Length: 294
Image 1 (cartoon, rainbow, N blue to C red):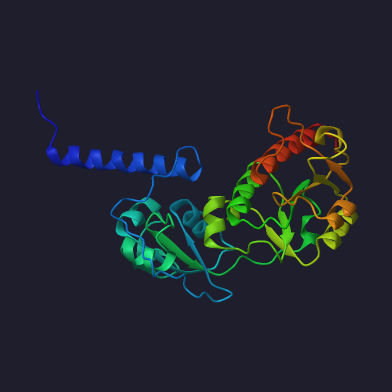
Image 2 (image 1 turned 90 degrees about the vertical axis):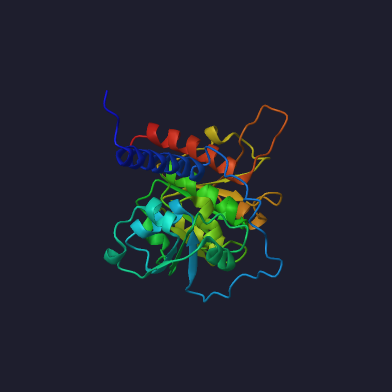
């Protein structure tokens, strides 16, 4: 019986190991399995301070996040900093074929820039912000998500993932008391930032008025809403409005939306994290819109 050549076996094992890593990376990015804690040998630098970035400078990190940004033709890429292992896992083709500079670095080099807590997976992409979008461009979208001063970039990123999953046309939020485009938000969004417009407006009440003129029914989620959300839907276009945890919707927003509604929860806990509430509301809205003729 002939034995398999050692070199062929090594190549095959390396190939399957790479495939297994890619599957694990994808599951971690989708939140299906936990991200492992930082290695014990990775010591935090007590003197680390975040770099001073220019207003048009954004540092994205994480394999899935960076890959999505590279694939987005609207994203202007400045420079890719990547470890040799991460470059293989990123799978973007030959370095010489890339339309932007590629710099090979060590994980420690990225730690110094992004900080010891950033799960960068050996890759960082310097970019410019995505182009500004206007409300008028959303007139053909049947479902939008409006955030009333949701400040945590992790929550906003998680909401983006759900919004893309359920086919929302955009996320609209205020310029003040809302996170701007950043590496933290992009990592939490796991690529969704590249797939949905993130529109920041000056005045939320005015923006809701514009959406009403475009044919949207705006529904504000409130734990004390007069009716369940399923009984509140109306029209062919819905804009869901969610407030920050704890504070909820501001009074002006409550007065401006077309209707207030609640998520009925029969259990002992009557409130949810805003990203979880957004996912449930998006699902219910999508179910209503698919049953609505037009």
